[in-house]
Length: 381
Ligand SMILES: Cc1ncc(COP(=O)(O)O)c(C=O)c1O
Image 1 (cartoon, rainbow, N blue to C red):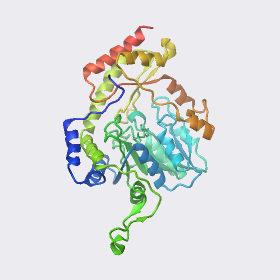
Image 2: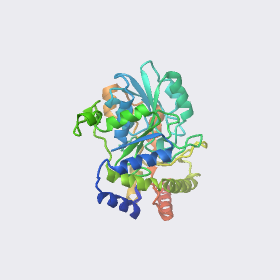
Image 3: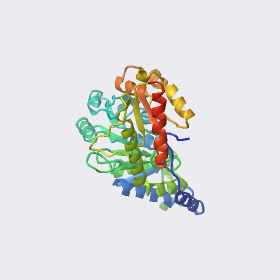
Image 4: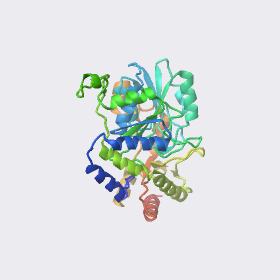
């Protein structure tokens, strides 16, 4: 089966985990710090806190900003719901700003229209690996006194308009990553937050581990620890971190291969008028977590469900990224959102289909996917 995404684990990854298994530390030992240091070195950020998932990362990233309850934050409807759920966890109302029709990322102009006196936060999502227009978003945030958390779960290895690496926090207060196996590199499960703000870094360390410090334990006794704030157990283990360290070394190679495959796909589909291939802004460099085709299913007279099923029969796994978050039943019931509220995301969603993209795909796999997609459509056109 050629799935829409898949990890690439080699012997050196396996050996790295085995070495940790044989060591004294399984969790929160030296490997976690080493992983955090490696992420800082790669992204250029000053501080990094590794956690148990991307969702944990974004939950405590929002918590670290200490925004009063009942305030609002703005994000994209075209995302995985974790990007907006993290606001709800923290008592903040998620508000959406529709996407740009070409990049499928949040449209900065539409952010402006959603800002009220209650807005405190923007969470831009670098959809499919393409960095949002952070220059514009940073300007809007500055003018309105808003925090920015970049959801870069799709974008480790991507570069902004100025050529610098996503995660350096030049444009934001915090950036979060995910290391789930379908992402560009994996630690099994895992996530990380980068920042250049020391106070936020210290708070994130507390939030990751029940809000506990060893402050005063020297004078009181070695058993002593004090819970300073309400935190969580979002620790990453040394086992996961050792896999993450090993994978990070291969990130650039993985991204290069992803981009080669994207080029092959785009070339193959460029003259097919019912397919729109992904648009990459010329200024940025996308790590291409996903390859999303926009397909005019009405034109080909076959439903997306039919196409997905037929491709599955040919051992090709596809997926849809994303059902617009505001249309999820919980969001409709709790906040009163409805279909029609964000028409660009909704129209995009009707046509979106993510086709297989992962670095371990061989050229033969890529050719097979291309020919099967064309065949699936040719049969009916
Ligand atoms: C845009 C986005 N944000 C957040 C997450 C959450 O990451 P995790 O699965 O590591 O919790 C994901 C995961 O798919 C995602 O795609």
